Length: 391
Image (tube, rainbow, N blue to C red; front, side, top):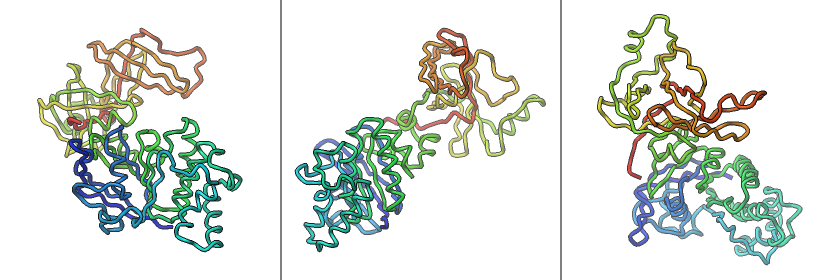
């Protein structure tokens, strides 16, 4: 099977006074596993229903392979949908559920049987083919729903939070199966979820949405490492987010000119600009690029991921020019096996989260404990200025 491109251009939708979508713009590539990610009520399911043909936009167009399909009913579009509740017929067998649409189209019996068995096999349910839906587990029902959707050979498969009713461990296993299935059949998947981990683990690209707006579209790496807004930074994983003031900007070359000759600089030719900033009156340093260049006195929103912050009982090396170094006290250590989350209160009262990975055996227990006085530090490369918009 071959997938289609899907282009969303200027799509808006109102439900009474509620603005569900606001001028959404997304381009989804052929054969891509694309996720619509955001909290409840952000507009992601409304957008999926508009692509499917179950809702009409107030403004904008939906192009599938460059053809405007807004005027097409759902059954005339090259799409099929797997719903959150699966929408299966409980009184029918697995075989009959998967065969249902082919029977409506009066497909010849031999061809129908061949195709049903092919798609039941594709989702690994051969041994359950003649069971009633009520005899299946939640994960098996989800696979039946996918087989029933795929047997129509759509170019775009729409998945509306299909794993949300399952427990966490089963959800993770089925997510891997879903990703494998996508790789096998090669059609375009558009996956709606509010779960950041799900989207990051399987998507080629993600659109992060909130309050009807598409805030950022990018690869999982881009979304996590380079969030466009404060909302994206907070919604994708955990982060430290601060309001800060720009003191001055300078080139890296200028910084190195003023450095001690013996300093071990950790900057490269690509680190074009640096900003000295104040975070709640504490001095800091952040790397910026041309288009992010800021002016003295400007208020900014600054983020750094907890796993990029180091914690130690001893100060870091003094020759690391690129480090932001602060003193604080451990307010709360939260041990979770593979890592400990530290909640640190800096000397000026600012609170910060630090994640410390346990990569070696802790022979004598935790090195850092509650109420310890510690140093926390991170590189200027690892902090990031984001747009602080009203979302």
